[in-house]
Image 1 (tube, rainbow, N blue to C red):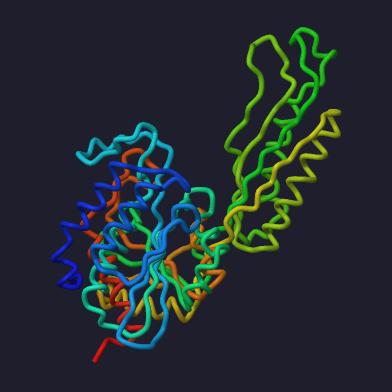
Image 2 (image 1 turned 45 degrees about the horizontal axis):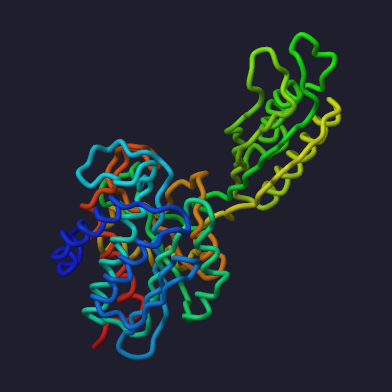
Length: 388
């Protein structure tokens, strides 16, 4: 089924906005030019309120409908990744070492498209609050916006977001009730001993054997400490030790992540990592430092809002174009903080199967942007009631 006619008319503008943002990526909370671009477009559209500088560079816009009614929040993330682009596109990143490899440029363009339509038509009661957030890719900008009071300040009752999905067919919507993305925790373990000459190991306290053993032991958290029916991923992603062939180093550092859906499993994993690290250090007479960061919570969709979002998506994509029980994934998303604060739903929009997100050749498919914008506006009109 086609997107909303008026949105289809300005699809070329949405593509131009998206490609501009793609060419000038910014990281984390430092989305100054991106936020300025968003605010400038919103002023052109004639939204009722624009609030800048939330969570440093976040932008919140308000569009009033035709009288009292519900208040719905719609969210888009704006930040890019610290990667070198390899797409070869005409609109490729102009900033060395930075690129939009997760579709946040497309998410922003879709929400801008919805904002333009809603500001033009006002075919709804109540209020729509547009949340353009920084720092989804680490930093938890969504959580910072919640901490700074956006839900209460703007009276948001429900909140929704779309994320592009390069593993699904173009234009296919997917979501599910309950956990759809995992919690993520990061750890850095530093084992410190006494360095020395590799020919005289007896005069050292070598941290490398302890680090190697610890790495293997940590894999038993999934295989021996977790219920086989539960879900957990413990990944060691960095090991740093030594600088020369004939030198035993003083320190060994292990870094990684833990991904879970269940809070009890999450607690167990942290406890076991600490216990195993302490045992490894004690067994080799090493000192130990553990930096364990509880990062994003699981992204948990609410049943009523998922059912509602699925019905709206079917209006856009037809029954066969919507998967209402997609499999959860172990990656994480800071929209989770907003879903902890308010009921809502996180929905994926297929852009056609291709390079995955966080790949140097990933690029958002502009053809699906009108569908995402149409989903947002139909969701508002359905929830708020269209103006008489």
